[in-house]
Length: 553
Image (cartoon, rainbow, N blue to C red; front, side, top):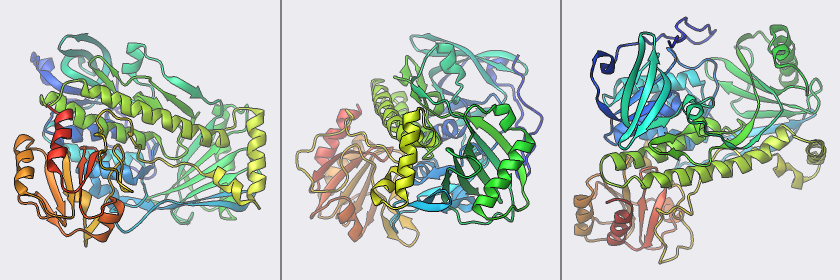
């Protein structure tokens, strides 16, 4: 029988709540077939449930534990992730309680050798990165789910096994009061790097696991005062050949992340006296002195660049760390998982609502596996610098760092390749371009936000459905009206375009023409996940309608 953790975890800054088990209808004799069961109520699983609800699809979300995650784990949400959280209608507390930042600095032997500034401009609602501990992410999403009747969150409920039939999946679940079966048309595994669903199906990831061991420590200190930015220290005196990362979080919480000397026992590294010694040395390196601090959490991990080769297996779908394992360098793990959730959510909703065949879900696997492999390639470059796997890479790293003092060409090699929106340029959902654009946003790429007025941005007017974006010129409103009659969820947003019946009409800011590559007028068709799936010169709602008909029934 499943025995969830029900003793509140200790934290010096966070008050863990116990979420009670409640008997579901299935344990009272009911046998409904649900549309979706999501295994794992971490950030990725909860955002997926909220996005499905926004698309009108109910889901059951199960979580083996009785409380939110232990330790900060993920700490940094990118702008792209915040746009996804906004689509899930849960962004307000993230912004209110997070620390935004836009730059990072790297040091070698005490001297700054590289500074990276993340792209930012006034057209963006969110900062490039927003820091906060994962416990708070999950708390905010739980509160959003409590307001959403289409999400049934079941605590203290663990996945045990599953069986498929022609219509879906029957999963056996384990609870403090016994086991029960739940039936669903689709099961989504969002249960993390040690996925029980992946293990049950016997699936193996492709890629590389690195041998280096890293320690993450969270501590609280009101006196450790520095700006909010990502700091990396290569080859500190007390840890030659290795590195230290420093991240600031709200509530006077700080993260130190450092590589262990080769051959050191992880258990030895986690002893309080070892952590205390290294924390003191890091503080002296960063601040020039030790300040009062209290340890909250510590863990050891090894980086991976691995992915499943397919995220769809019958009626079982994989997202987040259950689908891929990525190194934290460049804040990729959770941020990539949220892009998975956004991509899968609208496609699964379209299939369940009878608006597309289930072949649409193959495009989810194709697009996100390709993104994961691209990330593994990029992350591998960063990881080989942070955790050199061979003597040759260690020598190369030493050369790069020593030349970075004086040679500009070496400094970009220290670029940490932060998480970014991934282009799906080869997606089968993209419409071919008949009228080339000189610039703008190509099919497969993510749309760009625009500031339309004080506190008003373009993305604020998008739902979680397809959007027809018309920029400049004039059009016959009947054409747009016909599209809306066929696809009621389609939103028509007109910027500087006279379109009768548009859902939103606003003057076109100058940046709209620049960022979307518009000379006169243009039409963009955006997928629910904000990726462009077609664009045309001039105002061409008919062409957009044909592209939409290719994707949906």
